[in-house]
Image (cartoon, rainbow, N blue to C red; front, side):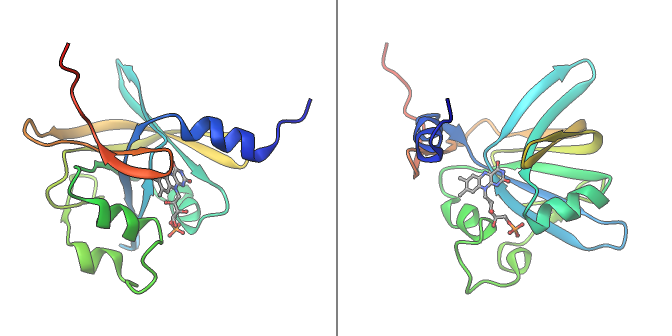
Length: 165
Ligand SMILES: Cc1cc2nc3c(=O)[nH]c(=O)nc-3n(C[C@H](O)[C@H](O)[C@H](O)COP(=O)(O)O)c2cc1C
């Protein structure tokens, strides 16, 4: 039985996720970044993570030709950055100039004040329907201890509220 696309989207909207910015750098120096919530830890030995990127996106094309990428984990004060890198602020044409960045060991951009980041070398690329799964081997990482995460749930931005029990 065929599933209605709206039903699939409604089901997935009930999955709360963190929000990341995937950044990458091509061998010629071009940098690119996009908002992504399809980020998962995969393996501890070796250290592997994955992201899923829609084939129709320009970022997908760049990732195919790049050897590296970084996952920037956003904190709850970084909604504007998430919107900029999701193409929701068309008035901002140069995403990186607006936000600023430093450069990780691999050359991938790291955004300021993020909750954490994982700098990766591309490990494996898996074809998956209208998306590609990019698996990265983590070569360096950072995690803050004092930041609340940005959360995306039911098509809304929010944060994490610890349970009292
Ligand atoms: C909260 C949120 C999460 C997203 N997660 C993903 C994702 O995991 N994979 C994906 O391909 N697009 C995702 N997107 C959509 C991309 O961010 C969006 O298409 C963006 O414009 C891609 O940049 P580009 O057009 O410059 O390539 C997400 C958007 C939002 C708002």
